Length: 246
Length: 224
Ligand SMILES: Nc1ncnc2c1ncn2[C@@H]1O[C@H](COP(=O)(O)OP(=O)(O)OP(=O)(O)O)[C@@H](O)[C@H]1O
Ligand SMILES: [Mg+2]
Image (cartoon, rainbow over all chains, first blue to last red; front, side):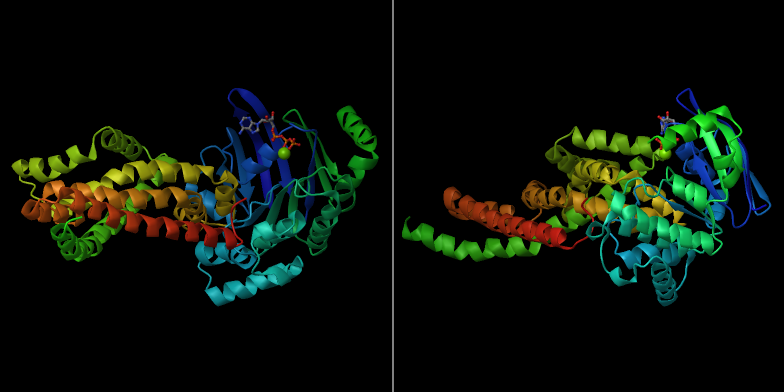
């Protein structure tokens, strides 16, 4: 077991958005987090990477357990070094070129020498097919290209797990494929990933586990195949029916 | 214009220009630099909501913005010596003009930093940077770009505000005009000359400001 999360609760101004979420992730897992809008998927992912401070819950990463409410800044920084986060709207550093976006975490964050950081960055950009655009600024790239650079920025840090929050939902339909393609390739290479998504094909064919959330609860956690073919809960069945009718 | 007036103008213009270049501009530049450094620190303290320091910064801004710069100059140069704090005139002018402008600029910088998407900050944390590193490498460069026109205006006001330093005996462009006028009584000609020199300086600066804005716009990056 690589990552184990227990009892995550989170309220915003009295509104309880997460009501006790549990999740276990094994090395090499690709977990798809599904659920209707407003069910708390993004909030959960943000809590797991401490972008949001949970009200309660514990997180165990590689055998090290922290209390998600009281966790210290230093522990957050250390745990984050094992993770990467891909945002819905990319969040590339707008004042940096593609290459600089990828090297910054290495040079400033981890003290990697400049030349070595460049080599690592170019390799990461090659994995996402963006090595031709080293000197472009984010504003000069399409959404799909920006998201691939954002993935490379994460990959360069050699993370043990990558969190994705709806990585394709800000993209024009014709650009979704190139990003999903990169993610599928990462999955094939054995990368551990936790992916909030509305892409059912991806959840069905690439992820091996599904966490289905609604109203701040986990309704069903199951292997992907089982979830799509034999959903156990009525809520899951209703969700899948609605999806198929879209 | 009489021949006498004309010869006074010809004689005094280079002298005043000389003081403008050797005193007014350096004083403006130095005060602006001080203002910029203080403003960025104050803005960051407020952005990061550092306890206690944040309240101190608000107090500083309140006091400075609520009092005239002329009164501040007098207070520091003529007032503080009775507490044993004696400042050289140039130093007093630099401190007062710099710290005065900083209070206004801090609000500009704070607004500019706040206008940068919080996603930039979060992305920075996610690639393993700490708060100061994110500010330095990501947020401040973008904030400066946003604030550039306002900062340019601040520098231009600063050039004009240095004339106040004349009131605490700093021999700069305007005081030079006063001194020469004290000898020859040609107020209209001499103060017009001073005005022309300030106008020249400010024109060049606003020209540079526009050039800078165009260069920033051309450099592909930022600006969503
Ligand atoms: N910072 C916040 N302040 C207040 N309420 C918030 C905040 N973030 C999220 N919420 C609320 O929490 C609930 C869950 O939001 P969340 O973004 O986690 O849902 P989601 O499952 O990701 O939805 P979607 O599929 O639309 O992205 C929503 O009701 C939302 O309005
Ligand atoms: Mg969401």
